[in-house]
Structure formats: structure tokens, C-alpha cells
Amino acid sequence: MTADEDSPTFDFEQTFDPDNYLPLYEDGVYELSASENGALSNSAADAEHIADLLDLSEDDHILDLACGHGRVANVLDKAGYDIHGLDASRGLLEVARDETATPAGPAYVQGDMRRLPYEADRFDAVYNIFNSFGYFADDENEQVIAEIARVVNGDGRVLMEIVDRDFVVRNLPGSRVYVSDDLVVADELAFDPETGRQITDRFLWRDGERVDFQYFLRLYTATEIRRVLERRGLDVERLYGDLRGSDYSIDTRSICLIARPE
Image (tube, rainbow, N blue to C red; front, side, top):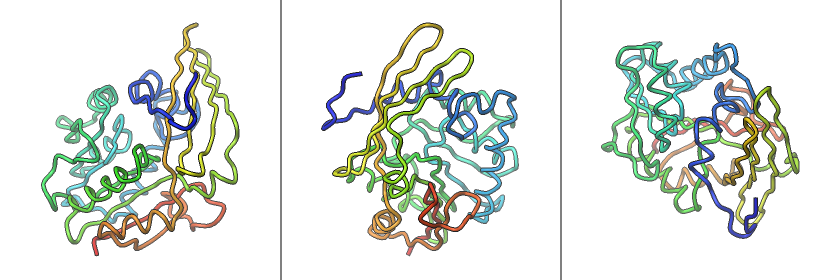
């Protein structure tokens, strides 16, 4: 794939095509065939940890922001929670709807996380997990936070789980390869210190056909994301290293935070 390193592109269609996305991330882990047995055990665990961290009750109205194929929303819906899910990918939302375990399922909506189609103070809890933040320019990423702050009510809670920039700077490999019986994925990885973006060139082979595309993710330090949230009226109450509530440290891969309206 040829791409101007100074002007990375985000091929949304290919990145979030279910055929390209699900073999890698169906169960919320970064490897091929993570959920071949269909158990989705990691998703069930994530749903349980989210419910605990946000102290959810069945009376809460909850938004899964960038819900993807509904791997967590469908679990929480089955557990009896009032779940709403928003994602920009029509294909992933179709998978989410097809895999619901209850008659109605979560209230899934296709939309733009920079302009949420919900009224102010609509939700008691909002969660955005699995590195689903940082897809845009800095001002647009901050607009996502502003929208979260708008739709969560004054007593609400916000959970975010994002990649820790410091971890990536120390540990980013130049390349990685995933192989399964019918799929090979090769990534070339780079980090741009001026923009704070991790840029991935992905080369994917399936059934003898090759698909190449590029995507990027703006990464934040704990200090940076705290300041963005504070500018938009959200106060970081707790900081963890993952959804399991591990201590945040210099060695943790992720930043997992709980914030509340100021």
C-alpha cells in the first residue's frame, strides 16, 4: 500500500468491513480466531467488568458508544440492562442485530459519534471501550467527548478504555503477522510523534485475494485525556490499567477511566 506518511488515511469501509474486522476482534482480543468456539468468553467478562465499574442497575439507561458488532451490548441486554448502541458501521450493526439474544435486543442506531442523535441528559451511563476513540482530528476527538458530556445526565458515569500512548511509544513493533487456516493479516506499524497517531498499513489475504488498507488511531497519555475530559466538564474519578480494575502503572497497555460530570 502506498500512502503519504505525512497525510495518513483512514479507510473506514475496509477497516470495519465485518469480513476484515471480525476474524481479528470478534471477542475483543487482538488475534485471529479468538472466538472460534462461539463462546465469546472475553466479551462476557468485559460486560461483567463494565457493569461493576459503572455500578449499573436495571433502571439505568446505558449507551455503548462505538458498539461495533454488539459483543458487549448484547451480553448486557441479555442480563436485563437497558442498552442503546451507536456505531457508524452498517455492516457491524447488522451483525449486532442478528446476534441479539432477546426479542427486542439493544436499541441499535447507525450514527456519528461526533454528533450523537440523543437528547441532552439522556443516559445514566456511557461506555466507550476497546480503543474506539481517536479516529479523527484532535478537535473532532474532543467533540466526541463534548457529545458524551452532553448526553450523560448530571449523576451519570462515563467509562473509557483507550490505548496508552506511553506504552505504545515504548513497545510498538515495526510489524506483526496473524495467521489462521484461511486468513493471513500482516500489519506495518508506525507512530507519528507530531500528531500522536499510531498508523497501521494492513495487508490481508483471504482465499487467494489480497486487500490493502490503512487506518490510524490518535493515542493519548493519561494526562492528555484527563485534560480533554476536564475541558468538556467531565471529572476523572478513577484511573485503572484495564477493565478488570487493575492498577494503572507505567507498564499497563491501556488507560481505563471512570469520569463524572463536574
